[in-house]
Image (cartoon, rainbow, N blue to C red; front, side, top):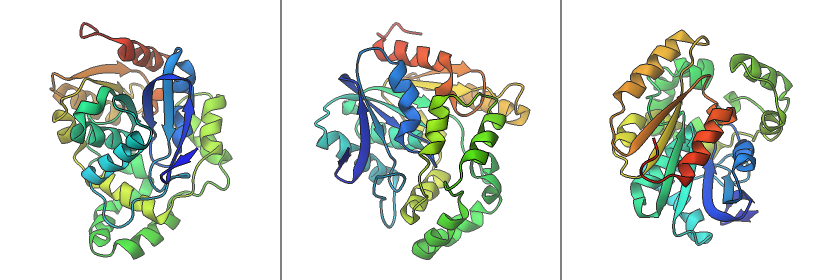
Length: 279
């Protein structure tokens, strides 16, 4: 369904849970999580602005504007109080909403998001473009429209996803189950407006925002052990530096896409049902 230019698929009935995906993918990235949850939840799988069937946020975009974007959907759906799950870039949207609307949050769940800064040259997140992102970011501040158009062409095209799927499974050491295949089958075209969101993600100090959270938060982070030792060390240090009484950290083995792991599903199910005693 589409509502107020925000596209979402709603799975199940019950307490509302919003799922916000990572960059380059649509809301159906959360399909497996939605299917794994027990009855009693309505999981809203949202396409992020400018990706999939959701309209982009034109011109400048800020953490506050991103929070307002999520709130506009919650208001349209008449969701007074909700839980929200965000992965990677979707984690930024989830954190933004929680910071500006804490009274609406029941539980906040971050999937490998919020504990680590991207760094100046985020090659692991943006590929070789990460090497020139400082320059691109500077140019984008002064000339956003023409920069968006050029950058959108540089990001990967979803026309042929077979090779992308193969590389994904190889990199993340996972089998291509039906949910991962579906995720790649539904890869969106990167719109010009989506670049505004990507630039916000690059410029935002996510750990700083996470330290400011005052809502009940579960942060599930990937250890990268035996896969990428440099990233494993960086992830461990980031987790150790996260000191917020409202944030509960849980480590899972593997890489960035923790939502496809069984232990992640178990942590989420338990946390959504939790009382203050959960640990």
